[in-house]
Image (cartoon, rainbow, N blue to C red; front, top):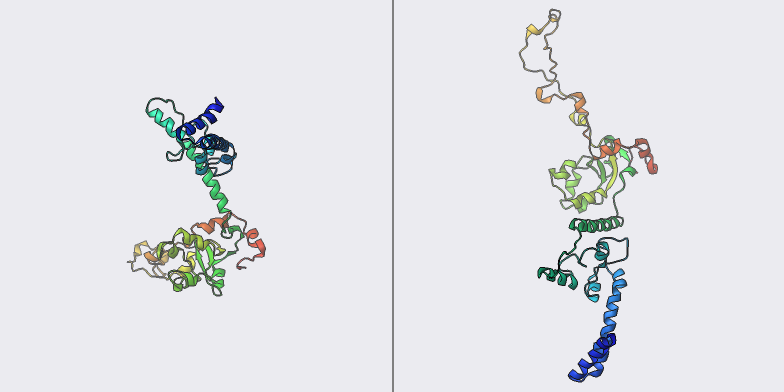
Length: 315
């Protein structure tokens, strides 16, 4: 039966049909069998070598359109090994898998039933895991900013002093050296120059222009230090509060007899106008920021000494 249908029958068809006995034997018989056998064997050879591990890389099966064409739809082998109970060999409807299309068509005609498919949610999980793994491997190839733990910590006064010799700005609690970028800034050099020695967080985050993620990534590559506390202490900007005598009517009835010989002053301590009053503890409060949290959760002495850095100096 194998010899008859594999070799003799194709030879008879070509020979009796149009007189090509050799063509029937070599092409319709031998060459066809060689191609079919090799394409079948490709499932356990080429399908384990060529392509991508779409759902799992613990084993060797791969998904590839070229293998699918060679094996008549068996080329999405990674899916088959990961989800063997699924009647499909390729999960997407458009992926080349004639067997899948044939079974589905028979199902629509009522000639096939109880088609098994793996839960779609779990299929998506497998794909996502491999995508995250690929992204993680790609991340290791990228040049990232200096780790925060390796950056020196500067006080605000030391930052201002350092900024007199090099163009340094503060954004989100980090000190950045923008010397190589000032002339490349799309908005012009003057925009950056105006914030040298200052905190540019508000301007960078939308006060002047809300920068893109790419700008944030580029800026992180310019980090040279961490600002102690994350920002300038508010009381330093406030300055001494002016003493303002309120224009309130004095109520002598509130004065004690022993106070009658002293200049009359109200009992409430109105040393500032209502709009100017600042509590002393609020004036020195530092809102927790990115750098503030980093500093608070590390041993500052060890951090400062890393790589021979000195507190208050950018090496």
